[in-house]
Length: 428
Image 1 (cartoon, helix red, strand yellow):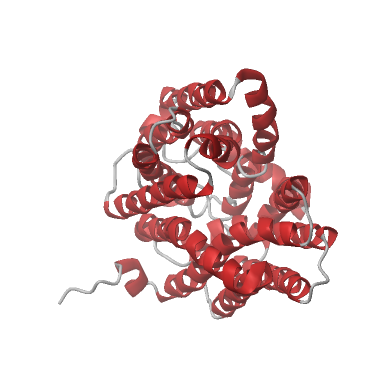
Image 2 (cartoon, rainbow, N blue to C red):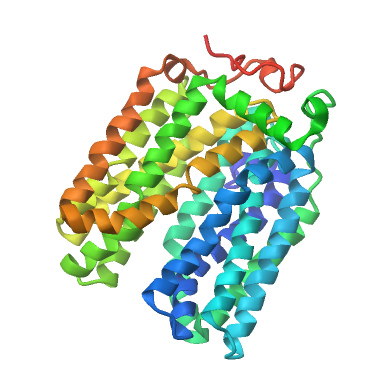
């Protein structure tokens, strides 16, 4: 009988360890996403305090992503992730204790979320850079698709689990469960023995100084048009399109679909589509991945207009599922392209610029979405979001290196020339 275990998990035991630990951690994150706002409200916080908590978790991305990228290219990446998990375990665990004992205040939660966000800013660049050290180059797409599958499945299962935990054990109990998932993840990370980078690739930038290493990482971005143009399009998606989901979607749901119940159906539809997209990305390999990614991002950017149409909950959920497929295909393809074509010694730094220009700038869009919709109207704002996002994604196809980037890079992309070649990404 043919094994149902995905080949990359069966053949790459180091990645399997990472995958198991991160699967539980992602589920805990989805629980936390629901529990944290209720934690603020449970201690007498206002809607503004809920927003303050969200900002406290995101702002450290702006401050520390680039530092995290430099450190992840300088020190063992799995050790940085291990420390990050332990810090996040402590932050969420302390928040849970304060809530369960009835002594928590909003200021305590804000401080702990800032600590959590700081650890997260160091974790993400290291995680992107670690995967190529655990699996062979021919299994990167499969590995990233499986990681994406866990993220997408968490969108469906996480809120349901969070609702049960908050109802039965309160926000403090839910955050305690999240804290435990970080402890489990740390235990798996402690057992990893990733491949070491080659001596040439691991050589630091001239002078070994922080700014020098940061500039060397930026040279990898600047010297590859497909990278910086891709980051620009991703920034537009995060700053312009995603606020339709996080800010304006719930507002429209309250008016048109009966509030949270209707919005839960729409978000579940998106989550199911995301799972389908990850399965497609796992099974299908294309010759020109960035061309596919650009088309997928254009479809993903239709999320705002889908919500703005104001059709029935069922129709909106189905259309959001289509955009969910596109979102997963884009991000799996994008991350695999970076891991394939960026020298391994600079991968975490390049990834840190990616996170800075996406998650780091997203609070700007979240803050502006409300005032803009008040001035223009809710539905016109949603239409405008897509009118900006789709052309930005399609503009990627005007970049020759985006259209021509091959699925596989020559050996020099990861090896001997280290950081000395910024433009040799295997693009004709």
